[in-house]
Image (cartoon, rainbow, N blue to C red; front, side, top):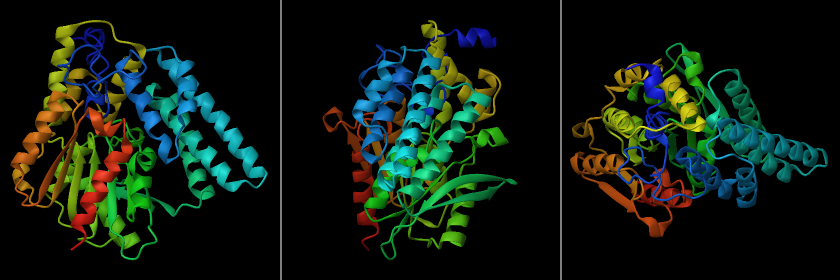
Length: 417
């Protein structure tokens, strides 16, 4: 199969937004309820399923300091549906606008307002690179998002300490947020294929912090921009997770038995692997458990080949990004490099919380249910969120508060005694 053939195979996975975004936040049904890469149960604004998903992601960060509803809709009104460059430009320009506002308010001594605008600048830059092609443009937008996030943490006086966990002669970047509560448990949050450690703060980290937990957010290999330094998704994900926990214990005093692990999307695979090997965590949570990414990737490719069609620019950009994060140069190499990504439920006996949105893909749903059934944990819970909850999207992309509520309720029970 030639690369050109694959890239023209259709929006189902021609972007392999269905390959990796299938693993981490890809798309909604767009008329095909059986799509293996489905991410949401309904359309919200854009016809392009990738754009619609990430527009909802941008909206979902509003309550924790990202763009407010009016801002997100204003930006969306300037975007051409399916056009990657118009998306990048719209969000990047709005990031510049918010940065300028933050500077003006800071100069007047309005520190709180400046920090709030700076966090919105971060959220804008973060969304902008979602459909940027790998290369200098992506790196420039990423650098702007990192600078804005770091400034916002300082201006808002949040208890954030940045770190780099040594791994394979390189580093895994992250941030630790210390809760002032004495003996607060630590939650280590691992995102998916289309995340960075900074956006995890808006997704769930801030809510965890506000509910009495210390929080660590980190990029594993292939996440954020670690792939630019030669770190790609790994089959044995428990190894980089262990390296991060080593640092949290040694540098921040995290206590074995008082550490929880939360995995989102492809992070649901990473933590499923860690759950079978890591002895220092008290519990693992996943939205959703994702023990067999290889199965979803292969089905997504077959679906794309069968349906045909012409991918949008946004879909093709997601495709390029997916290959980059996996360290692959072709669809065949992508499938080969991810073929060993499987977690064994028989190795897992610690308390485990599984969360599934009813609008997620049938492949995700089947894997989550089988995982919950087959793990040996005597203490486990399965939460299915339907449309009435407003949280039925992938990783509760349409209601992040519900994600935090389910996790914090479970953690309260686990650490109660």
